[in-house]
Length: 157
Image 1: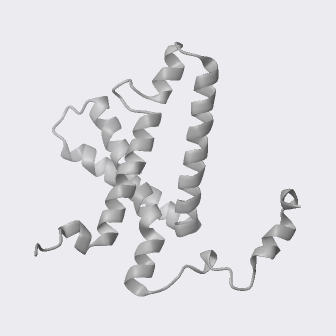
Image 2: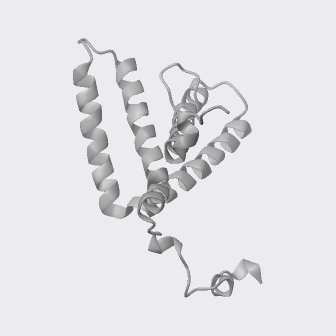
């Protein structure tokens, strides 16, 4: 019988790596220095405008889900701390590179730091629950059953 792999023995790390790759994919899909991104597709001017609009709306929806989950886990002060850590980490990583640092390298560092922060925000509540057994109160609706929300939202009638 073979021993379990490192990632199967540590599911939180595996989930973090998956979320990190998904965040990096979304960020690089939106903008990257290689010129194969949504930003360059829109700016270069070729292609169907309706397709650009649909892809843009899909990206806005994806980002709204991503940052809603991150903000729900960290709230305001946590987001401020994450932005501070992100700015400081980006600055230090750029200082570690041998000079002169090209703008392409700087852009990849910024994309990497943003994706790591997004993945950390997405993994935060799961890690707290796994390691401490504490559920986030803002996700538990014991006192508000389903019909409470149904009564508030008119389109369910």
